[in-house]
Length: 126
Image (cartoon, rainbow, N blue to C red; front, top):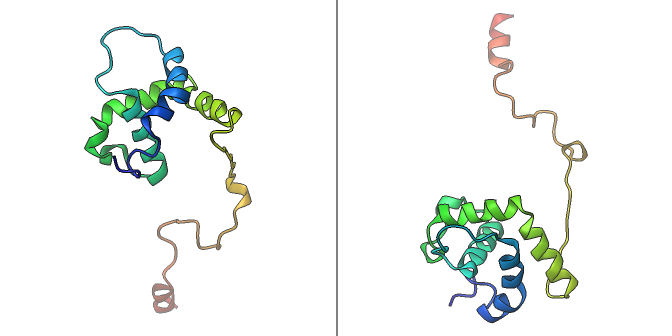
C-alpha cells in the first residue's frame, strides 16, 4: 500500500483506533460497505491535503459515504476522542492553534471589496 494514501498500517489501526470507533457507534441497519480503516485513512487524506471531498481517490470508496461517516463521527466527537486517546498513549502529538480574524493584519486594500472609485474616471470628471 502507498504510504501517502494509507499513512497508518492496519495493525496499528486495529490496536489503537478501532476499539474507540467500535465503542462509539450504535450499530443499526446494514453493516458498512467501506471498512473503518479505509474511512479513517480517507479522512486523514482529506485533512492532510485539503482537497474537496468529491476529489477523494477511489481507493477509499465512495466519497459521499466517507464524508457521511466523518460527519456522524464529528457529531459524536469521535475524532477528538481518538486524538485524545492517541495523545494519552504517546502515539500522536496534537497541537491546537486557534486563529481569530482580529489578530491578523492586512493591507487597507486587502478587504476584498469590489468596486470602489476608479482614478481614471475621477480624473476625467474633474
